Length: 122
Length: 356
Image 1 (cartoon, each protein chain N blue to C red):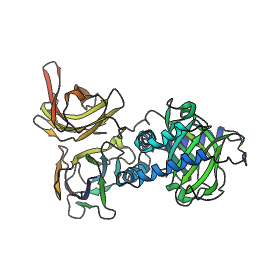
Image 2: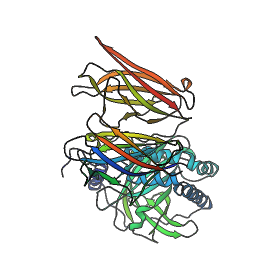
Image 3: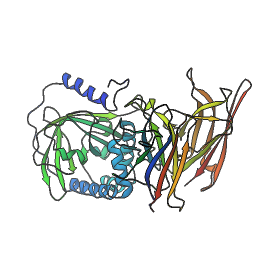
């Protein structure tokens, strides 16, 4: 079964002034979604400044198992507990293509620009 | 911090308190402990094996962890799918071959109710057996005050055999763990009605910290149905075919400031309606391509509607239907979504790739 490891996310630009309060929804093969951070209302503050532009997943690592694809969506949490008020930043659908280490840059007309750094494990 | 909408499980906890204030007296002891028959042991043993195969697989472990943190909407869909799907197929076949005095079999995961102190929860899926075989299935949430519950039990899984059919599992019960069963590797427990006179079911809990002869605990089971207000579903039950909506191209947006605030709904086989993005939208202007990468499970067809989010009411940009017969595995197919309003012609192209 293929695996993909999300190593880090880098903020090049936010969707709003100040910080984006970023969380991920990772969904493999249209299955049960995984929230990162797991706890409701938790997020990771990000901005392009060097002090908080990189969110690194090393403890714990973020390794996603999938059969055909895994859709990783970045959200900006605007009001705790209410996903209706979250802002969609961007998403990428990872499918197995035989390549290894990679990064992908995603942008949104709302200003958000993020890079996902990842490694294909299998 | 005061929120405008409730927490995912708030409503159930609030209702628990209301129901507790309304209910009558609770017995301090129950009828005799039920005997575990060979057939019941067979079922629990098979369920344990099936569960361990799934939970110990890389994908299963990932899904189990996700379920523990999922909101009620996705958790309900996923639990129903789990107990009805491939993982427990052999268990269901075994249940059909046995003559048991029960009408439901359930699989439930114990978890912490988010941010609510003093409550334990079991989120489960139940299917009909015996006279209720093939008749119904349900998903449920059982909430109980956590006095007397070992902390480790919150990590466990519970298999249950119940007198009631799946749709009738709701209501009060008085339950407790009776004995640790080394052969089955967990604790056997039972549930009675609140007067302690009528046995409702027998269950096996696996997990760390299970104890022998715990105190009686009252709990209320809610049958989960429909969708919880503001939460939209994300989990899709397994179906025959699987495709990816790879990209959406804006050929000509509506004359609305030169761009549209786009989201689409998709509905496989006239079933549950899903949104993508699940909330919010993606702004698109002429010539833009959105690599949406939205996977969809379906049996025969998917109805897709494209929307432009507007303050005064969202605008329907058009629809298309994707049928399995139009697709070939591995090939991307283009579908046109268009609509007109006066002189305003909107055209989008949606691309779909069939996986299987």
